[in-house]
Amino acid sequence: MQIQVHYQGLDNTPWMDQFITNRVAKLNRYLNPSASIQIHLRMEHQVYVTSLSIHNLNHDYAYTAQGENLYESFQLATDKAARALGEHKRMLKDRIHRKTNNFLNRATA
Image (cartoon, rainbow, N blue to C red; front, side):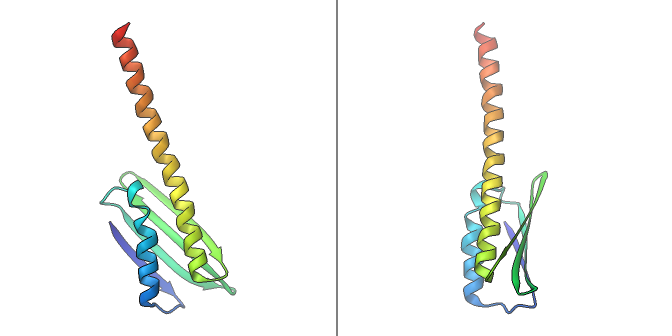
């Protein structure tokens, strides 16, 4: 997975890089290894804003969150992404399960 992090008006710290890596690693179970993630971290009007752009196979996703500090906004954005990607994965599994059951029911009939 490719990860690009862009800071606008903020300083990059090693601790922040480690935090980003750990949070993004939790999204690996929902994404293809060839997926790419772009992260934009910025401060607007005394509020920290995180924007995630995820490109996974034939799907593109975008998530944005705001918080009082940089870590809170990034955590909220990755939580939104995990919920949405998990729901999408469940829908795909359910669709495959229904098709398999329909096929098996027709084969036994």
